[in-house]
Every structure is written in structure tokens, then in C-alpha cells.
Image 1 (spheres, one colour):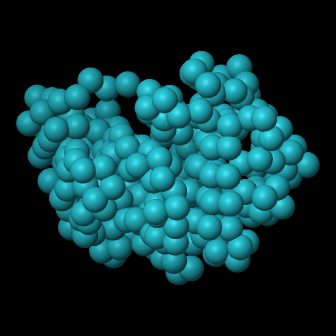
Image 2 (cartoon, rainbow, N blue to C red):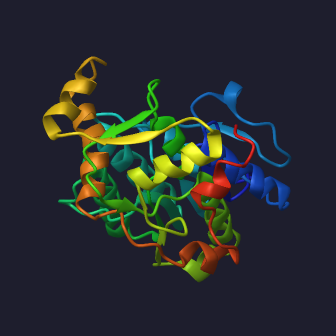
Length: 283
């Protein structure tokens, strides 16, 4: 597959990866879209599709041959996601990929409060050990999701206490990723902490949403018992419920606080805040 573009992009059938793929196409870059379902891939100029599966190195390895730079979007939440990440990283190294740009998580650590952040740290470690060059984009929580946290009764519920987070839009993450992919060698070995422009508590977010939508939105600081009880009705497995609850306890612990200048440093534009975001046309 060495006659294909040497820039490969995963996740183009999703929101973030799709943004990156479209922005690269608009900028005139050729790219190889690595997808599980070719029928769902965006139709872009100079962007052939190749089938891959993070969990299937036999399929992925030939699809990665000839790739110099790989944009690796973290896989959908799953109990075995880390194993799939490891298999794909190993396949990339075996195929001769030179540089991985990986979408990690803000504050990723082996013992971070947000349980899925631990998987991101372990994926970073696997990439570091692979011998490939890398750039890590450690994204804060998606600002895009804040309006969707509001229940039908107008209440945002979670055990976040009065903690804050520097949530970032997927648009800003995508623009930052494209900036790196334009000239990856300049960003080799760097970790960028991608945030919005301000620290937001959920109470503050509720105020902004109330003012922007005209609908009364409030925040209820759940106890841990309330949080687990209110989510039990979804019938989700324990690991996923723990992940949901830990999104809020990570905020309470202060692990998502602290806006950075990295989005501006990469793109030359200030990141989008919540008040601006809610005024934008929504997908």
C-alpha cells in the first residue's frame, strides 16, 4: 500500500476525526483514511479509504505500510479499549510508521481520578516504548458536552462539588491537531495540554446556559451514593458507571483545572469559551 498517501488519519467517521480529515482536505493535504466501515467514511479529495481495526493487527499492519505520520484518535469507550490501543500501536511500529499523533487526556496518569485517563496514560507509555516519534494531544473534557449534561428537568447532576475544569471544544482540538499534522517533525516529543480559555464550575456552566438558552438550568452537587444510584437505571456495566462518575470526581479533585496557552500556541487563535460556543450553529 506504499502508493497511498503517507499521512494516515483514523476516526474520520466520528466527529473529531472527521473535523481533522475535512480540515486537512480543505488545506490541500492528501491523506489515507483508516476506517472500520468504508461506507461511513467522508468523501474527500485525495483521501482513499483503507480498512483497519484497532483490535486486529493482521488487518491493520498492511493498512499502515508506507505511513509516515499517523493521527490516532482514541477508540470508543470499551472495557478492553487499552488492549486494542496496544495492538494498534504495535501494528503501527511493525509497519514502519515514523510518527504518531495521539489524542490523549488532560492529566493522564496511572492513578488519575478519571478512570479512563489511566488508559490514555498506558497508551502513551506504549507509544513511548515503541521507538516511534510521537506527539500527545492531552485534551480536557469536551466543552461540546456541557449543554448535553442538562436533564429534562433542567438540572445538571454530578458529584463535582465546586471544582472547575478548563473544558475545550472539539473544534479547537481539531485545529490544534491539524497544526501538528502540517509539520509533525517540529512537534516531535511534545505533549500539548489542550484547554478552553477559562476554568468553569458546573454551577457557572448552568448560569451561562440559562442566560444563553432562556431555559432555567441549575446544578445539583450529588453525593457519591446519589451519583451511582441515579446512573444504575441505565444498566451499564460497573466499569462504565465508574467512568461516568469519575468524570465529576476528577473535577472535584481539581485535576481538570488550569487553562493553558497551547491551543493559541499551535493555531494562533484563542480557544472558544462556553458563552461563545452556545451561540454557534450546533451539529
